[in-house]
Length: 340
Image (cartoon, rainbow, N blue to C red; front, side, top):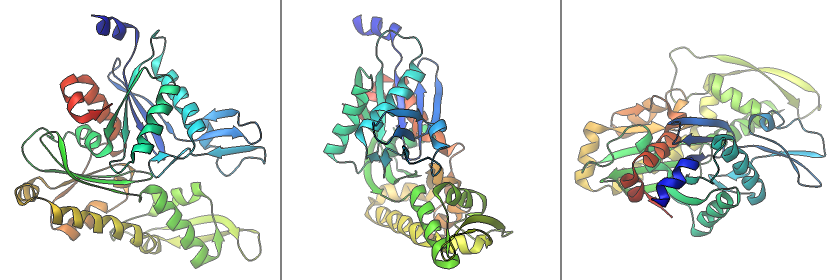
């Protein structure tokens, strides 16, 4: 009775605390209510938080010396505890509206997270205002979020390519049979593009520019119509601003190394898969989610490498958050797939 009474005055939340973006699902509203970049702007000397989310993202690479725009999450885990707490406090408050009691929170974490990293997530969420914190593995949340029948006695394979990690898992009967967590994701793609621009064009570009290149002309597989793009940066020789034109083919070649790491991890996971579940995948195929699923041709690249059908989620960016929301809606499922 007391549990039901508390729920009248609180709002359970599901949080995808991503390296690049944070999404918050409100059980009360039945939808994602917060979708903002995982960025915090702080005063360099005092550590005072000046902005969070989209407002802070606009400051990346453009702040004066006394202001730092930082991303408190790295490779899917907490890198800066204090700023993560402030960021979570901001997102929880924004999603919680006028409820009187602090919410229960379900947070998605990488499958390869350590016990120390789990404790950091729980402590940060608790200090940010959560009444109770549960954790759910990202690949499980992603699989639920894209609608895979995770409760069936059959194999389901999910590849979730986020900003900091790539989560690969084979799921059956509401459990993860096999999983791999790779510290490779959208950030690695961006960094690879930045290094390519230095090496091939002697041009220094920022994180936002490299991400824009990835979105506009990046690809994992040859495109029917290749593209070009004008890029502005700083010439490393002269130190002056410079504009060059780059081709989609060279960006695809630059992305080959991190993509090969993902393909290798998928192959190893399939190689270790029990034969009965592997047989299921011949028909069911592989589901790809996360921001990396939006890279052009990633499904064709994985299909070519595995000889399995590959599907891209309808809304890959929302998969993990939607999965936490679905788990919150069904307490029996929540108990099976989450941990305190």
